[in-house]
Length: 362
Image (tube, rainbow, N blue to C red; front, side, top):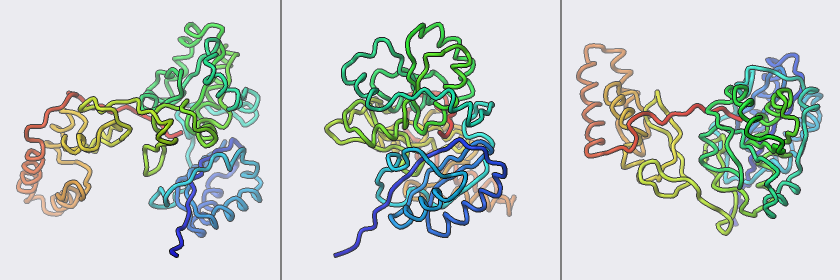
């Protein structure tokens, strides 16, 4: 019988004062690479944020490392923030210093975060959604518009931001719109909710709560259909179905055809790279561009992502040849342009301009 190795994805964060992030990064990177983990970890002066994949042996080793570290011990609900995956979801292990994980341009101490942390337990939140007794509440999705469109909790409204740094300007609108209702905020990884709760409370929205354990804890605990669509994840999967076929609901439409789909892709033009919702076949039919503008810019610049399974043309390699042999520029550019024009023959786009929206890792 062939042994099948089981893998788990863990995502967590912790607000904690870190006096020497550079040293902590080096120590963390050395340990995680040594035991063979893969993922992405950021450490700053105020927190650690981690999304990693591991096998069972690595789980035990990494948990022991965290538990015995003076800064990283006491990670809340670490087991409920784990989910099974079919292998490593990252190509390598990266640990970096990052000044601020979300672009709010303001830092809060762990004490400030804790003082503002009104938590609504997932059991209470589920009951509100199940019974429909939600009229006295605002369920506020703190993620960017891009992510809300793909998937969200039932009855939720978007924060109506393209980037998190817009939040401060939106709070006055929230105060007028929400009135005396209780505001329950949620996000994918929790960091945006932690910071936004402090900001909203200081601005006068005192009746503000955040979902305890954020989306991850809820979807790892219940399979009830209260989450609509897939889940945007910050690894190679991009779009993850979180529940069974019985409870899963597809809520968004392909930008090309209007077909219902949970599939996500990226615009092939390097300067755009927009995350788009697109049926896979329609994406291929449109030469992997999100708009007429991007297709035209690609033909002009020939700076496009290369995926040899979709397009055998070695764009990056050919641009490298141009750098070394400038006299061949016109010949090589003509070859690449004719190749792209052939792919785009008879292709029509619904969108004239780039569909790029900024989004911030949570």
